Length: 233
Length: 105
Image 1 (cartoon, rainbow over the protein chains, first blue to last red):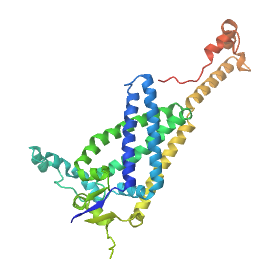
Image 2 (image 1 turned 90 degrees about the vertical axis):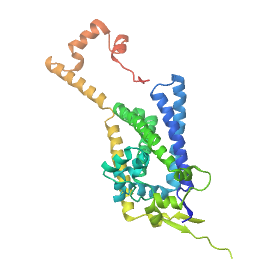
Image 3 (image 1 turned 120 degrees about the vertical axis):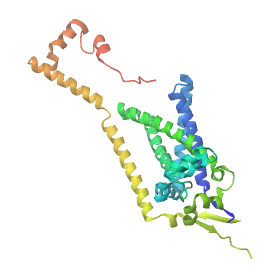
Image 4 (image 1 turned 90 degrees about the horizontal axis):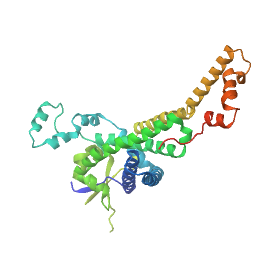
């Protein structure tokens, strides 16, 4: 079947892009200061950049919640929906190990000894790994935003224990999630090139129908409809 | 070229999904709010513990020496007579009073 499916609407793509840019600015400025890679004056300047990027990200997230609450709700509903196929995906990580080891000597050992066979169970809009990433990102955005602004505005009111807890939660959740996103999410999404293109290209956020049926058959079958253009006679 | 889009949200939000999303959101907010209020309530724990310890010491000394008031404590009297001069004096001010300022970074 020839055609395209709108996978990422404009509001979601803007949100994703701003989130990505601000996240890495926040991570780089925060890491440079925390690990003392810069001098005192530079650290003060980087902290100003850190606060500004945090403000931009906060405004964007709140705007997205207000402008597109339906997209937020559907996203949460999707990432929280863990059915039998979602759990089955984790048995062989969506078939990625088989894919990576194809043509090597290890492939036959994997096929013989691993308890799940090649191929991925049918997934909805996001596969099981993407669902875990979605939950992680939503949770970390909420926690990092809360801890960051509390440390900025109410440092004295938090007390000694509160500052210690909030500061360490802020730093280490940011580091762990950034490592997860950088070394797992980014490489996997680049491998799935049509999805990557639909998110970042200038134009509509569509993927080919064949790709959607192959990767997200349950989504295509259940949640997608064809647009019938009215004929001008 | 055939075009496909997602069905509108009104057709895709299920009763189960609604309960799940609101349930998880409310649970997360409740746990988060509990933790934050807990931190605020206990933020002066160390200061209160120190105050309580000092009051206990004072009570013990008064009981041991049968004193009516804290200022009759012989150790305190000797401290001021022989060393610090008077309460709020220069020496006692510099040794006994603290200032709260940022000590990190």
